[in-house]
Amino acid sequence: MMHDIQLTSLLVQNATNMDTTNTVEESEKQTIPRPITKSVEDKYLEIMKALQFDTYEMIAESENGYRFTISHHFETNVRMAGDRGHPGRVKRLAQETVTLSTSLPLSYSSSVFVRCDTDRLDIMKVLITGPAETPYANGCFEFDVYFPPDYPNSPMMINLETTGRNTVRFNPNLYNDGKVCLSVLNTWHGRPEEKWNAHTSSFLQVLVSIQSLILVPEPYFNEPGFERSRGTPTGTHSSREYNSNIYQACVRYAMLEQLRHPCPCFQDVIHAHFWLKRNEICSQIEEWIAELSHPLQHERTGRTISFNAMVLRRQYKQLREELAKLTPLEGLEEADYPFNVGSNITPTTPSSTVTGGATNAANALPTCPTGTLLQSLSSSSSSSSSTSSSSSS
View 1 (cartoon, rainbow, N blue to C red):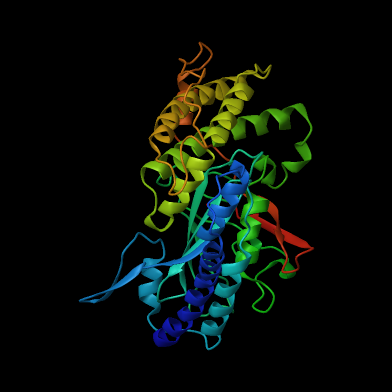
View 2: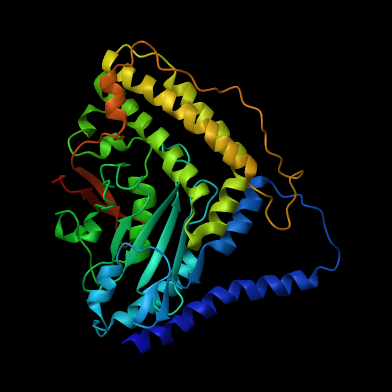
């Protein structure tokens, strides 16, 4: 079984080398150097495309057999599984991997990056950049992935690693212990047609579902039953309060933490992402702060949002310092993409309306509802099916 997995990994290497070979051949044809004229968006897409899919040595040989070179949530599952595997597992993994190497979502707004082990296709890591116009915008969210022995009869196992060491619940579908709740992952009792199907469901489908149907502009309404309050004063206030929690947690854990302690698998991705988008990220956070500064009539909501605005200002100050430390990417110059160092946003002390209760609640941010019901992408590119999170235990 292990031998078969290692042999099929050659397919991945061929796929990842294909784009590199074409790029080298095209560059050799250009004999006259040209100055950089591309916009930040065009340059971002060009650079990030080359970083979307690759291999990384997550497992290395050791005296006792093998060891993990990086932290992985499913290490125990891997060791317990041994060499067991479904007969069609290797072939299916090879098919999935080749698809990932050419079809991962890529846009200036949000992209998906995948790393699989150099010898084993059943062990992967994923990084998703939060979509624009959402409280997750430009944050880097890391997931650990393992394809169990009975795959594809059962879905892959996925765990969110960006949780502030299990202190932050970023979404009703993303628990603070890392659990990802989707019907297609069989982590929620959806209708039969919404669950994992060994013949029609795919890993790419799951990734796109997380990116586009969980990381949404108003995640508060992903909670079952909360959708009916959309458009009402109470629903609007509750959604703003929910987002204010995510704003500051996103900056702290999906930006600052990623810059300071990036996963080795995605170090190049994180550097390129934040260096090229640093001006946009700063503008975005300043807009979040301005949004939270608008007074609200609802007293309880106003107190929480006021406190989160204060925390966000502090995190933003630290983020600017980290962004200023970033070195230009190879082949690019600071003069071509300068960083606007100045900022009028400064930390403030909490207003008199911020009580000790609000401060204590913020230590475990965000405070989220208990369960959720979403729509999961179907295997068809033009249709969707329901996804959701289970009730918290």
